[in-house]
Length: 311
Image (cartoon, rainbow, N blue to C red; front, side):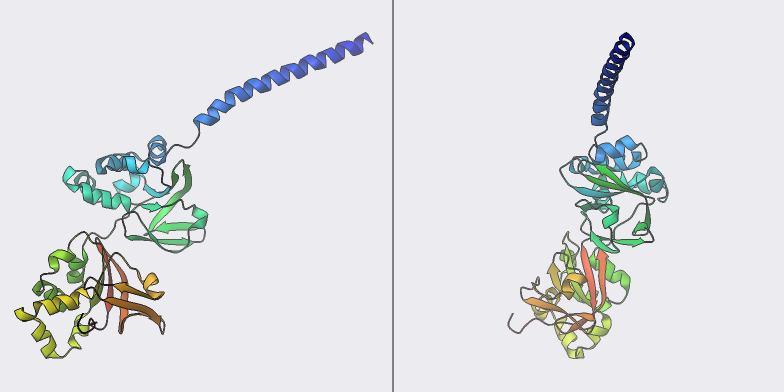
């Protein structure tokens, strides 16, 4: 019996020691776990150590406080190596105070509102905080963003998620006017915008949606119509027609295809619809959709659309 008593006491002591050790372990682990709780997007990026350039750029663009905000945000974060791929001198130029707006435009192009986990990414376009859309491709377990590869996904932050990418993605940097001129097939439109004194307006911050008739579209009009519109006394009429091709805000083709009646800058509304596999604005067919610009989006149309008489 004495031996049994000794064994019993030993077991009790061992159990007590184990319990104490467990309690001590938990006490040490809980603070450690608390210290590992996710920080916000900026803190997480800085802590990772391979986003020094991104952190410096966010500071220079005045975006640190924004990305430390409530969010949630999804950030496609280029590594230091990704920034190093930019042409020599590009980063140094962007970090200059006079280029703050351009830098902010590029950085916000890497940010999507809301928290999007990699498992929820689908092939298609997604609107960024910049206003322009990025093209996402999810295929064979990999994701690309405007061609940049996601090399590490789902870094959880307190106000969103970070997906690491291997290249800096760049938004369109030409406005709707410069984009149209560079395309080479909107010479008549560019000339008429100049005659109507609307170039300055369409080079403004916008954003705008422009239904842009090609040179061939204008060629469908009777020759005397264009000649008449070019006369100084018909400037108001020319402005009215051109403004009828412009909407306030960015309206992409997927939204237009669903059918809508939207007010133009001219005042009257245009109707959009999907028909025979294409998208139409009034009686004009969209030949090329969703051409991104720094201050809006252009849809190429095959016919000049005219506002209702008397409006």
